[in-house]
Amino acid sequence: MKKIFTVLGLAFLIITIIVVVKTVSNKPISNQKEVVLAALPQNAIEHMSAAIQLRTETPNDDYQFDTLTFMKYRKFLENTYPLIHKNLPRTIIDSFNYIYEWKGTDTSILPMVLMAHYDVVPVEASAIKLWHAKPYGGEVKENYIWGRGVLDDKSSMISILEATEAQLAKGFQPKQTILLCFGADEESSGKGATAMVKYFKSIHKRFDLVVDEGGEISTEDNKSVKAPIASIGVGEKGYVTLVLTAQKAGGHSSIPASKTAIDMLSNAIAKLSQNPMPTQLTTPIEAYLKSISAYNENFWEKMALSNLWLFKSNVVNKMAEQPTSNALIRTTLVPTVFNSGVRDNVIPTFATAYINSRILPGQSTKDVFDYVQKIVNDTNIKITYYKNYMTEPSPTTDVNSKYYKRVEKAVRAVVKDVVVAPMLMVGATDSRNYREVSEGVVNFSPLTDAKGYHGIDERMQIADFQKCINFYTFLIKGE
Ligand SMILES: [Zn+2]
Image 1 (cartoon, rainbow, N blue to C red):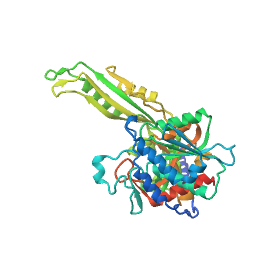
Image 2 (cartoon, rainbow, N blue to C red):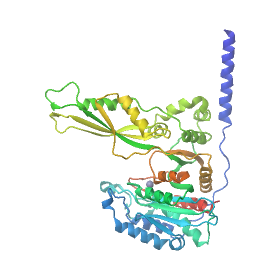
Image 3 (spheres, rainbow, N blue to C red):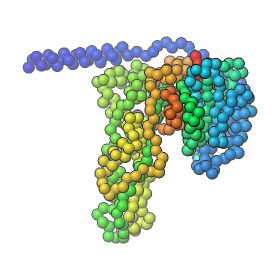
């Protein structure tokens, strides 16, 4: 008996030593050299302001497309960036999506793509009074540029153009060919990006690194990490909506049956909310946790993150407690529409609900369907896919790849003492299509704690504008 306790005690001691050593030796990358940013190009702020004043709202359907404004935006680009329009051949895809090709000196290297979109979501009429600036005024005040689209995604587009124009003015020619790709409908159908990729496939073009909007810098999200965290998007979750329909003959509400279509459907939805899909730590999220672990200033958290071999389930359970981190470790299911009934005294025959799901890499729309069917487990509930709109989760870009490393280097060139970590995108971007023509798609722009996406007071710090232009310049110069 005594022997067993001795062995157990020894094992416990060894594990404790390993845990402590791994925690204490997990040190941040220290003393990054000083960051010196080039000043904003002359008139860059005026250009951004002018871009915002052109109301390139994404239409709800193709018939409402405001051709005149999109034409004006094209004229604005031509007038504002003369060197680009003189030196970089432009291909127009489906009216308003643009590809500019900047030939490199070494055409044996696959081209790099810098992409962005310039359509914006509409401003809610009822919310205009809550704004602290005119949504389409392009105002510059309190060290911010204000307006719809200044972050999403004219920040990227104008920064790419400013960086390119400035380098052309210096007579610079890149070694690697660079394509600038700008979409006009990312916020609605995303057909532009699909058409551009279709075009690239038709001419057998493949790409090296592709950089699109998505990941950003945060100083607020993780309370235990004091350094800014730059999250580089390396993959996107999938998307599907399922329609659940319950059918049972209704009738007069004075003589109800024990179970109605509404009861049956409510029961099915309750089962789904009580049985979320299981958690899973995917490769990008595990890499994210490892990347930030050294910078965690809470000893216990750092210990858990530095020893995922032992504490993985504790970490995952903790992440499941918050909606933002929960979305990173499981395929989510949420009811978004519930429809039934016509009159207060009629028992309806049908009840329908939409269940929206965002799918982790490694799982599929079919897996979601099968899971929902298994949990609902009721032959009276018919389950179908909503319309044909669904996307599988994207493949993920390897964190050890040259593409990721190159963007990491560019981030470090513009932000001092930054923690760089991979991230999974929970929403969809145009770049998803580019995975068919590149292994190096990443989502990042160096905006910091940006506020107002799709909402009130969308605004960009002027300092961030400077960072963005420097970031793209670094990539263009291929340093
Ligand atoms: Zn966007």
